[in-house]
Image (cartoon, rainbow, N blue to C red; front, side):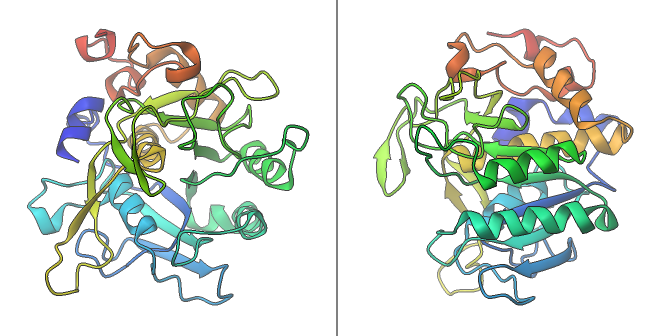
Length: 310
């Protein structure tokens, strides 16, 4: 995470005193380990849509890793593996089981709950680090409708582009929605283990089947070190390494939490416009990089070499 923070220029926000404080991030994933040293005291609400109870413990490890990227404090590493927005707080909605599998019904229910109750917990950002393929003529599914309703309700929805690349039109649902912020990996040229095997150039490419340009933005997604849900087990550490667009998505969510902690009045549409004009052009095709790699100084209106670099 120290490498990721440097790549996106997060220190520009820290110098202004922006650390995500006051910003709630809803993480629709496999749950969270609220006792992890980097996440302790940060979860304000959780619900398990798989088991239908309040036990949102992470039995997969994916969600805890995601939360660490968004806003882990880095306590267990002396700050080395601090997440992007260490002052933010989390609403954890468990929609994935211990194998990392889920169904759209659970995600839709979680989104509807957020539309009814998310404001009570100051939720501004919804992170969805998952996706599924859709038949050519069913893109306008219930899941897509739900994420678009959440966007229309004012939430910033960040969704993974998926790991089905590099074929054309390989963005996964709900990242195919033209409204949400769809995130790909900026470094998918590196061979990493995704979907059970080692691959490079895995990040989903656009356009969507409805001819919408996607992804919107990219962020580092290879070999990301973040919180380990199994940290209590003998022989394991507080951190683990994972790769994929699932990891790139919370980099964007955390960066936007930094922005909102200093500029709370921004709407989701205004944030998306800021993204479109502030990213670092990596020189890749539009259907691979979108507007480019997220650059925190650019989001804050600062002219830096980091955001201009190519």
